[in-house]
Image 1: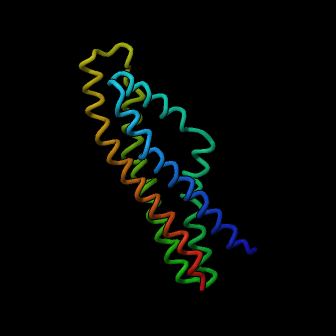
Image 2: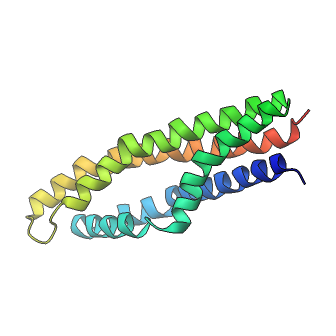
Length: 163
């Protein structure tokens, strides 16, 4: 197995892990959290936002950001032009639709909720915070889920286009 193949497969695996994380969150966590009362919703979100910052998450989240463009570059350098275009598309989808949306949208919202003092806030302030946060965060979550899934699919196709 060549270094190029190892990098390409590694990129696809971490992209798949990231897509699976975002997909499972969309399928279950959003709905489960959405059923909670306001105070519990915000408390649970604070806990999840802190818990997700771990090596397993960063391996797939940052690994995809790094390995997809490296695999694209290696495809280009190896003369696998069709594969290159697919890997480039996967890298761009992931870089903008997952990483970009996360950094520009979800992280600022996460930080806003993280700084919110639930313990000392009134029921009205808690309700207002949830209304300010939930719909926007969920929309951004859907966008990065679709982008991650598309990046994964396109990167898989690149394997079949190595000529």
